[in-house]
Image (cartoon, rainbow, N blue to C red):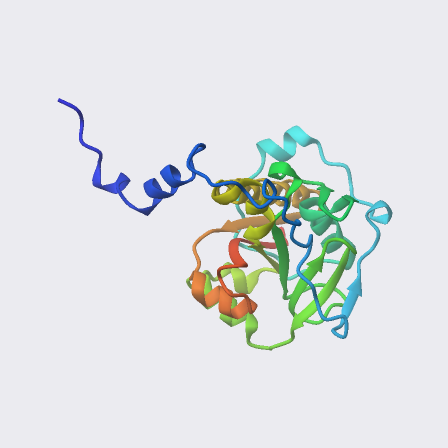
Length: 253
């Protein structure tokens, strides 16, 4: 007599895994000869854009890799001390920095991604960064700059509410909000690309944990959020672009 499948394994998650197995996919857009999607979501150049220090000019104290890995933990309490623009530039470079753009079709970055597709956009909710007004910004990875998205004074409270009222969002200096643009990944891998985007999110956030140790910061990853509310807050449609992961960052108390 075979063991019945537990009810908890009969839902959408199991269907997702079955539906994205190899051998179940039609030809991808790449196989059909269609052009690859843009490497970055376009932005309005009329908005305020803040240059970031060049990665090679940022001086960060050396951190032993083994120590960083063995001492890694999620931190939810932060000091009131702000981050510097150089520290923000360093964390952005370590999590989505573009080392090379190749033929306008793919990028080589500081984090791994399936097929070098790099399907993410990075938004920053800035609470305390020297010389940067509080608000929501987007990292323009191809240019290593920050583009202003919103200066709404209530946006911090809206993000906290969208993340199920997790209070360390209000205490943090910066919140990283990574969104996925599935076309970039599915262009090559079809529906299976959705698996790869979630794996890639882990690579990015782990780099943030490790890099933050070099600037005396703690990190707490967040996966509990109201998808629809957060997508509306970011001004994205939840289909062609959706929030995939969040992390708070602040100076160690």
